[in-house]
Amino acid sequence: MNKIVAVRIELRAIAAPTWRYLFSSVGLCLIVGLCLIAAQIQPSFALPPPEEVPEEVLRTEIVTEANSPLDGERLTAAEYAELQAELAESKFPPQLSPELRHLIFLLRIRELLPVK
Image (cartoon, rainbow, N blue to C red; front, side, top):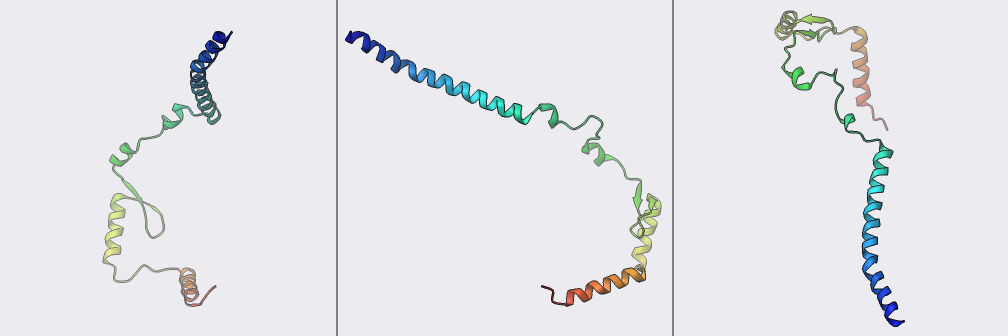
């Protein structure tokens, strides 16, 4: 009877680490799998939509239109170059509307006042 008990103890001692290793690997796989399913991670989400133009293509395009720095109006490249030349040659800054000048005045007064 003592021999049988010894054999059982030896089998348990040998089998226990194998089962622990198996369960820990399966458990780890299950946890990772459940996390991926819960997060709904799919490799197709990492790609941009097919109708989007790649940034590399956009960088190589030549810009032929621009917005006016004065009023935001759309200008051609030639008109924009003329306007930039005129603004560079001007001795005086561009004229601002009286409302905008008053707003700038009020903001400068506000800077002088200590506000807590």
